Length: 590
Image (cartoon, rainbow, N blue to C red; front, side, top):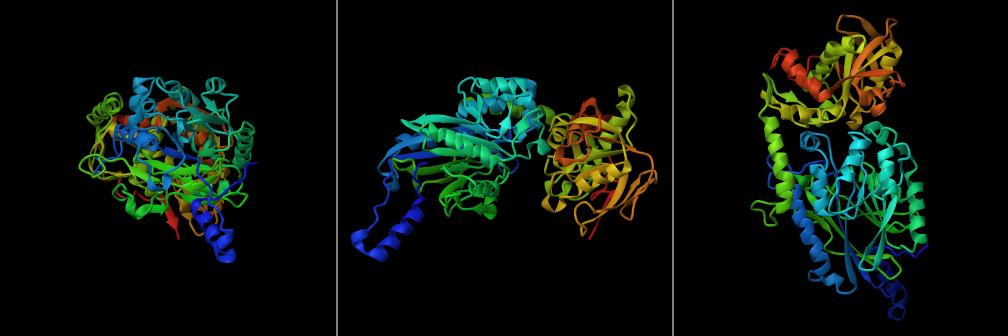
């Protein structure tokens, strides 16, 4: 195990303390940097290829992001040396920490186009050394992830995850055998060996669709095993790129590890910044912490941990100085988030012309076509705000649940299943994250609302006590804004936020007046048939369907919504049917 030295600030403290105690004759010599490594990084690109959206059109976008990366990459190797980096070789690597694409209207354009996807094109042009596998990378299942990875034509970054097992997924296993997927990899930069290890959230099965991918929960153990393997190969500079949902999870993970020099986190979209950093408008008020944050490993040594807000908004730049033993002994003063900006901003850059022409422009055209197709007109604004659909009944949530109930009722006879009594849609599957104004509702809106490859499904024969467990799960983590909160159709229920999780559902009644739960107790009666999405039927968001058999009915939930708007509602969303704030399907006590 190599000798470890902490970051510059801590080294300086030790030096000063030593001088104060022993005097000049015993002054400690500061370690010498022999190699400066610039780690360029981002995470959670999530198919936001065009820009950051309404009001922020001059920020973000894959084409401008490519320009910024190219500039920083050149600066790291051949640019003027900052005052604190006068000596030592210089090198640079570029990594992504997962969620490299996201279901939605932008990625729908990729699916319509076929392999290689627009997102793959963008990442191929940007040029990554390694890419962590995130949870959203499995949202369309393992085969689409395999298509994504297979689409690279110019570069061949290694996709990394130490705690995923691909033995039972043939296409991903083939990519692993080819070296395109691995637990770790080694990059040689300016003669120096840099080890890169990946990790993915153990919650993967509950929040995405990995099918037969195996998941190891003990992330620390598998990462430490990769550290040991790399060190046996003579690699003494090790970077962990992980997708564990929040930076706090990475900081905690570091406490169980030794030998990791740098952590690049993903999944949390936290904004890390220092005074004077240029930020995306609105981000000034949501800065999570300094860049970098510092974690403490199991040996008590400091490890820099970094991340960026997603959507190609920033290129993270961490500059670390290694001594000849591979110890991090300094952090460059030019470390920090680099904003991706255009327009009249002082740091504006021009979009890369190739990415603009081959990625951004075709996606813009595809979205324009979807936006031109009006499916319905709404008399009332439709609330799909993330904080609301995950905590309370909303009229858009009701619309989604109604569309599922309607579509399953229409198609049940064709699939030989009973018509559903009720429908449940998890709030986490409603993704537009805004309020759609009264007026036209377009095909583009439906893809923004319902972007995943979730198929409308029917689960029959669910006993009432199990149905109550399903409702308990739906309200078990409301205080955390968890995506499992259910928007419902065909029934109403009352829950008590003051009760502990698992004992919150007090009343439940079908629309025909049948009582299912009274005073917190299940009322005996016939089992229920539920319309839902296959993600939940398979146990996603920890819904306790308990391996009950289910039948998918051949339409995605986006298609079900589109069909309901056109055929079920005749193109009219009325304020009577979908009043602002909902119609009392879900009542929260306390």
